[in-house]
Amino acid sequence: MDAATLRENLKRAGQENALRFYEKLSPQGRQKLGEQLQAQDFSVLGELARDYVIHKPQVAIPKDIKPVPIYPRDPGDKYRQLYQNARQRGIELLKGGKIAAFLVAGGQGTRLGYDGPKGEFPVTPIKNKPLFQVFAEQLLAWSRDSGKSIPWYIMTSDVNDAPTRSFFRQHNFFGYPPADIFFFQQGMMPAFSMDGQLLLAEKDSLALSPDGHGGSLRALDRSGALADLRKRGIEHLSYFQVDNPLVHCIDPLFLGLHDLTGSEMSSKTIPKAGPLEKVGNFVTGDGVVQVIEYSDLPDALAKETNSDGTLRFNAGSIAIHALRVDFIDRLNHGGQLKLPWHRAEKKVSYVDDTGNPVKPDKPNAVKLEQFVFDAIPLAKNAIVYETDRAEEFSPVKNAEGSDSPATCKRDQIRRAARWLRDAGVAVPERNGEPDATLEISPLYATTE
Image (cartoon, rainbow, N blue to C red; front, side):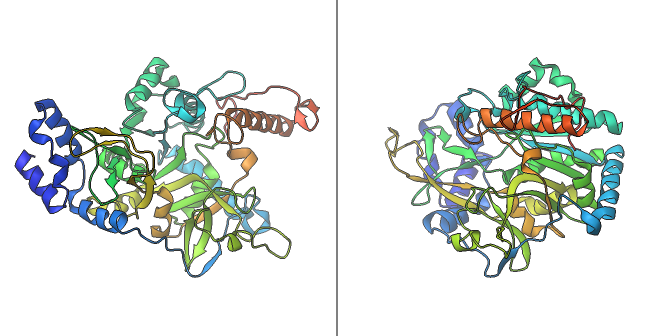
């Protein structure tokens, strides 16, 4: 796209000001800014600025909010046969090469005090294996047991793409077949000033930030990953995020249930730790399965209880999903991902009209993100399946306190002790906790 066309497109979007330093830039600077701008969707820039920046949208929650129907972890008599069939179907899908893994790994380890991609962070209690290795070994074990290598799609970010690829090469891909790993980058969105103009971080660069985990579904399409999935004959993606080493990367029962029920997007849930736990809430809103963020669910509803004292709205979202490839394709039809945008006011450094750098001391900009759970209301037959927090959810998010490396290692040890006891191995205890440091490699015990 030449400069004149670029300027005309920006003018139509009301964003020509983004080129105010263009004529004074070096050829390299013009190319850099031009490429960043061309990566944007000019047809919606003006609309986004109007509807999400200049006018602050009201968060609309459903009028009729009810607890979501849940497939329970314990099938009981009601679901026993269905779960047996589902697990068998999941195994058939794996053996038939119909399942791929999708890891969202764009985050940095900054909050953990680690300078690098979060997936490199050492997390296991004895071997100090990084998160990437934990997932790789799970997938290798399932590939071995099913007789089919499971394609692994890994979404990085602009900041950590090169380091992530390098880390995998340095560790010989953790034994994974390189041909079955597809790295691709998350999309970036420009920040807007409060009056709806694109902000420049430098004279030759937009102020950019990742477009949210919902953008992963757009990135699958634009990167060629979706085409690769189709070429391989993949029907379902097992979606998980990088910060949770307890996740079951592959769960035949869950994937089989997703397939047998005809669901286009299925989700795992755990009972909440308390009414106001900072996790999304699965609900049925106006008759549709969806997630309401903890900040948007009225406290009165969050605290409602059933007759037995349990929480009425007790289905927490933990960002573990199964998605049909056809559904992702449909969401991207026409080149625009059909998900709503979420507005966040942030402090964003920028250059002013004179080219001087400005570091604000209060929010001065709007960042826009899309969330993957917003695809759930668009899916046919969306289902929610309950898993166990102790079995499958202990993320590493903070350096200390809750959701820290210390709590995650504790939970890994507890799970290993439980597995050993279930296998008939005596595990010493002290004060109700395992009196040993334990680690079980996924290569020897697949999580299920």
